[in-house]
Length: 192
Image (tube, rainbow, N blue to C red; front, side):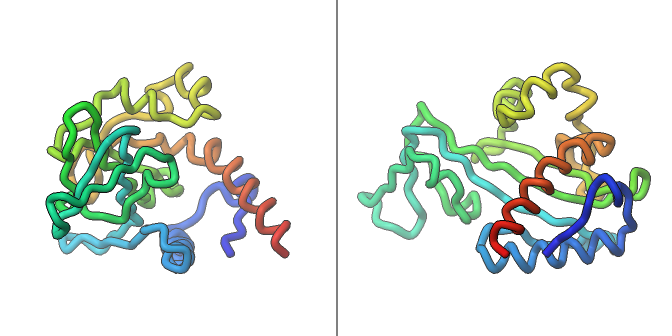
């Protein structure tokens, strides 16, 4: 189990980050939630990543390789995450959209913390509008983030891929991860 107290160990090295990532990915594989480790052929650095498809309510999708008459309607929240590649899903309605979210967690040598990079696009490659990104923020963080939006989330080039991504500012990692880790520790203590 990952047992790190953000208050005590706010900063750690890249080797520690990679060790935690390996543990996290091992657990992710056990529960099947899709996180994986990627490296670049151009450098030795790597990052954790996950792709998530969100289907807005009422969207009807069909899967390639199935009969043209077989379609799956996925309006419920539990059906929002699909472990599919974007070429495996074709949108069949014009009023609703399928959104592809990419999450990447990289280590920042400058800040000595993991950094969350993310982007969102429709299946045709169009990026989500900034207002849609802000609307998608979880309610428990929305008030705080909207007070200082660009101090919390900004857009910059992905250091490994060289493509534009949104970034949770490294100075905010501790602030946003502390409640998550506390909740995780509570859940783990209940299981023991």
